[in-house]
Length: 381
Ligand code: SAH
Image (cartoon, rainbow, N blue to C red; front, top):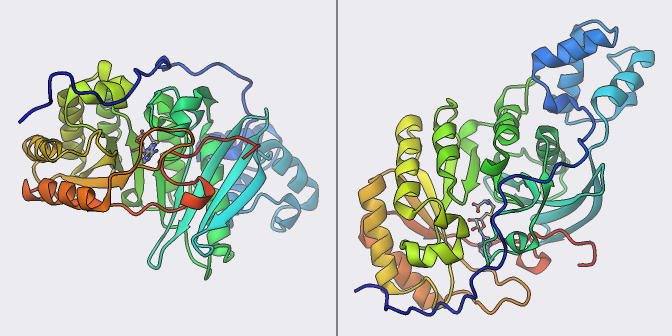
């Protein structure tokens, strides 16, 4: 077995360049969620208010999920509006929210202070509620099957812009916006952007998401997933942060020849290097790594690739891996399609036969272009 010599994937080599450095654009206004509790206390003191207001304001934002100055009745009226104005400026304005899956999935298009557009998706399940957040507006990784990747990178999001997507989602779930009122339990960095290309702000956002109230939202680290195309140095750095978030690696091909095309960053860091870094992450955190694999008809779904994927992952990660096979969500105008059901099933069976747990992830939000890889902010959709 092996790839035919001239395997024609039907992919015109991606014409988009890889972009690691985001364009520098105007900074969002200073926000509470950009700062550690210590820094918030300093900022409040500089504003001439007693230090305890840092905790009060943080309690409102991270605990009550509120950005409403007048409602903060434990703070004297005169200080409320000033503090909210200084430390809770509106960062994201909802342009449009659409829902599907009988109201259990909801996508919001947000506008940032400078007009930048981004999207997040909230999904309610019987046992949990998950928000899929964006870490960048657009993406520089140029994956040819991904709508965001094809649109290029507008800019990095700030820590607070990431955190505020979580706050809005948590408030929506609490207030019954997606069915019975509940609690936001999971956060996945699988919206727009490559989180590890916006490394510092992503890691700071993870801390805001996971630190207990009033420092953060108090969501369990184990319920947070950071997904990456495989930026090897950043994966190694993340392993040293002392976090126990789940790492997801978007592999999509077990062989370098195909992965070079599907995930262009593979031309920098090869499959073997990515898996070695993933192994390092699993070893230092004790967390199983998720491998994401979008099944694309006649491109990466052959039985031999399933066998190769299974044996490769078993060797590199042993029991510390789980494969999420995702039927491709064709992006508008794409020539590719999802693999047929029987092909999916055979693929999963073969990976599992190699000793690697593998499940097909059902994709939510298809009708509202909110499914995996379809996030591409555009006001005319
Ligand atoms: N940049 C990060 C996170 C954002 S994408 C990453 O690539 O991991 C989240 C997941 O959706 C990735 O696994 C990505 O490869 C996948 N994806 C992108 N486009 C898709 C599509 N059209 N169909 C199915 N999955 C897709």
